[in-house]
Structures are given as structure tokens and as C-alpha cells.
Image: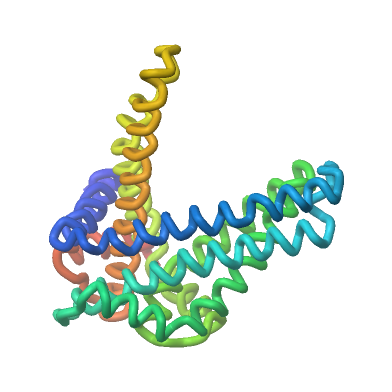
Length: 275
């Protein structure tokens, strides 16, 4: 089976899990709203820092700006991780045949707050460093791209590892990296499939918003733009849920050698990088 066909099949398997229990969308949906509100809370402090530093070209390297940037990454990382842990906990237990409610998923996330906070700190440090590298010219851009990609790949399975094994952030990253050596091909293939589905699904929303802009009429621009934004937001929430479902499936296959239904073990196995 070709890579594109396999990636699409893995993405549709994640979709099947989601359609069997649409309530799973509650986790990324609430995460999106909370993240938006948290981001808005940083607007006035950011304006204050910009005014205080004169919004100079090197303002992002001033201590207040760096501290604010770190705080922003810490808060948004914690929010994303908290809801991802809740979602992964529910999916993991349902894959194992257990009956778990959405409320129990939130309860599991609450019990894991110390681990979530620890990893959020690490994620914020990396995010802040990468943001500062953005102003370092071409060399900085290359280093930023390489480090960013390496961090994303190494931490790909951190959430299901934390949920299933309850280990600290450093051990979770190490464990995720170990599993990565086995599942590199599967991760890339599955991400391509989910990314392709997300792109195709978002296009109508983009087209609707674009029609509002092209019309040149305010009475059309506002409603069409609103519809387009809502459409894209729904797609983003769905994509986030699909991605986490897929991560849990890959984790289970990497640790047990068996793929949870409705995933086809031969598809995941076929996506693994040859030894």
C-alpha cells in the first residue's frame, strides 16, 4: 500500500474513533476557548512592555519581554497539555475496553497537574529560546527550524506516555524518544494523513471568508467572515482530537505490538521504518 493511501487510512481510523464518541471534542474545544481567553489576558501586558522598551528591534531580548514571552508559553502550554492529557486518558482506557466518562478524563488530568506543569515549563523554555532565535538572521532561522523539528518529534508521544506510565517529564521525553526509534515512519505517515484531511476540510471555510472580502460589501463581509472563522475553528478542534487519538494508538502499538480497533495493525506496522 502506498504511503498516501496508508496515511489516509490511518487518519480515517482516528475519525472512526471520534465519530463513535463525538464528546471527545469537548477537550480540544474547551482548550481552544481557554487558550483564547488566556492569550487575550496577555495583550495589555504586551502593550505595556512594548511601550516601556520603545518597541525596538531588540525588544524581545529585553528581560521584561522575555519574561512575558516565557509566561505566555507556560500558560498556553499548560492549557494544551491539560486537555490533551484528559483526552488521551479517555481514549487510552476506551481502547483497553474500559468505560470512562469525559468527567473522569478531566479528573485524571487534574491528578496529573504536577507532571503537566513540569512538562509545560520545559516546553515554555524551548518555545522562548526558539522565539529568540527568530531574530538571529539566517543562521538563527536554520537552528530554530532544526531544534523546533527535533523537539516536536522527540515529544510526539509524551502525552500518552505520561498518562499510561505516570513518569516525570524528563523520563517521559526519554521514553517518547525511545518509542520514536520504532515508530518514526508511522508517526510521519499518520501526521500526513491528518494534515491532509485538515487542509481539505479547512478550504471551504477559507473560501467562504475570502468571498466576503472579495465582495467589498460590509453586510456580506461580516457574516461570511464569521462563518469562515467558525468553520476553520471547528476543523482545528477536530484535527486536534484526531491527532491525539492517533498518538495514543501509536503508543499502544509501540508498547504492545497490537493496534487498537479500528486501527489496522498491518497499516501501522507497514509504516514503521525498516531496521
